[in-house]
Length: 225
Image 1 (cartoon, one colour):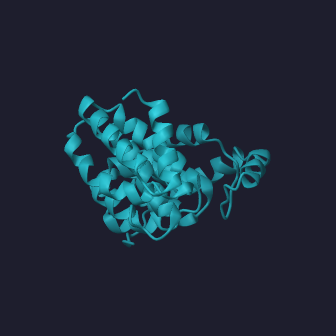
Image 2 (cartoon, rainbow, N blue to C red; image 1 turned 90 degrees about the vertical axis):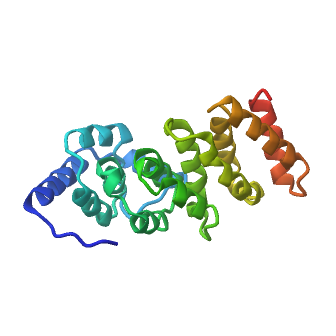
């Protein structure tokens, strides 16, 4: 990770956000999330909506985002994804943060709020498909869907390299739900992409993996090919 010199303004905003988080804490929400397997080192139970409101009260700041991430509270990590400056995000930062993900919430928040806007997004999504950790691969699949949904300026051809990587991922039962969502989003992106997903689904039907065949069935039920 890069090392940046601190400054009084960033520190003041950092402390202000910590105080706000404590004011909005909700122990019941935190306990409920833990019961569902969404765990963090520290979770104050603040709603994502409230975190978004907090973020709007502060200007984007790469330094502030790094400080928030390093705190390692659930709320500070989500705020970091909301307040960082995408143009300043490096591949090293993306790898460092993503390899530390331990649940679907922070993975999806990072993809939706920050990663898809960052210059290395397509490169990292492709690399993470081959990741060793489950949550790295999960982030890759979710990020592909987010790019398909939100990055309207890029041509469909940017997504072609992903199909080869998604074949082995289709065998992973733990990725079935997020992969199905992503493929549906891709199919709705354009007529060309719709055709590609149809061909991809046909190929999955012939897979020796029951998980892949089940995914193909679900896609056919959800998409009108």
